[in-house]
Image 1 (cartoon, rainbow, N blue to C red):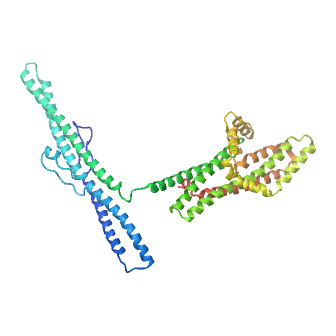
Image 2 (cartoon, rainbow, N blue to C red):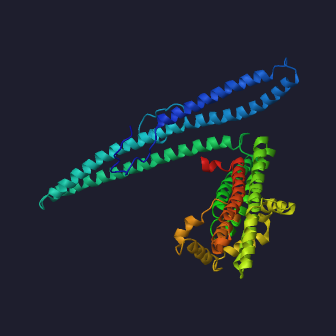
Length: 456
């Protein structure tokens, strides 16, 4: 067991480590090397059998030869590591000078040699420290008449101090032995690893890069995609914020999908991985398309409500209310152009300069939209914006949530002219379609394996 108290030469063990544990690791490495050598002999024997002369036999022999090459490289790695670390601890006898100038062997034995030097130096230093302390105490107890004894004791004290300094120097030399042994072992292992067939080449590093890019872009897309689905209820700025987040999510999902395509081309991904990645990306866009269809329905209701708000006569109010009641009974019967436009938009918007400009302009500080959002929340909360939060929150898509809330608030001004059931029908119809879109979008994230970080 290593000494714990290293006073007066060090604050802690200057040469920590367990040579026996190092040698035990060396033996494990040697055992692995021997097993690899045995497997190499077996593969060589099989690959040299010519009686299996079929196409399968020839293909097997070719693959066996390739495996032999890789196993042989692995054997050399384990063999070199075992030699460098050592499989046994060789003791070095003799004096300090004998240990200091002994020929290097392996890391385990040289570490042990360095520790033996340090342990011996510590023992000498402790003995000298006791003598130094005793001399100092004697000096402290002398009277002025004992000048001859004082000089002798001072010499003893100084000699003990020199011995302590010499012990520190021995420990410093022992550290040098340990460091040199570690460097030789590291260089020996690195020399084998740097020049064999198992060393990672350009394509190995490229594959690692593709895997890393695909993983972190998928994770980012997940969080952005989920965030875009839960901020749309915010008045005034919610739709713009969701638009930015949703576009970023689509871009990162596209990058993640492209990484899967590259992995498939490199043989690191299968057809299932490729299909799920592509289908996941497509479902994200289609899901958002469904939500945009619902959004067009909500905007239609909001437009009719706007016309009702400017109505002046009883007849105008009655006509506007009838239009809203009529709209509430409508089914989703958008034209082909509207449907295609809604489905196409989620794939186009991430790369549309106009879309980015419009959303970022709405989110620009100083635009007044943040104050408008606060005022809208306050209005919905009866003068308290915080009370307006739960009344504003909705699981509907960003393109629908705020519009539905505005419809609900606006119809209250129409009074008895408006059928309350109509409002519920409008809200349910738009919300149902938007939730379908949200579900498809989340399903797309899951198929692209992007939900794994959240679920794990």
